[in-house]
Image (cartoon, rainbow, N blue to C red; front, side, top):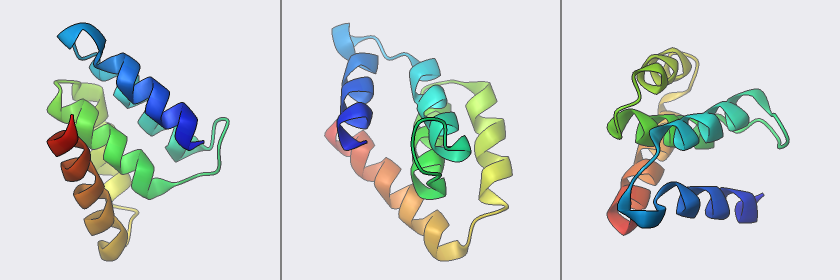
Length: 88
């Protein structure tokens, strides 16, 4: 699973052009368990990154998802997105 996440996140930033829809798709993948176990922290992380990159749909999905998450999980997701944005 980590290999899939790494490959897609790297491909989304190739060529200096970021594709927010790839990050949104990754968030949906983790939110629905499509091809992986459901992981709401990872789902929120990728939806948050997609929203930051300009995907309005991701921003809406992120807000809906946040309402179902515990405060510690939400904090972990925000931390993970911040760390990813710092590195990339």
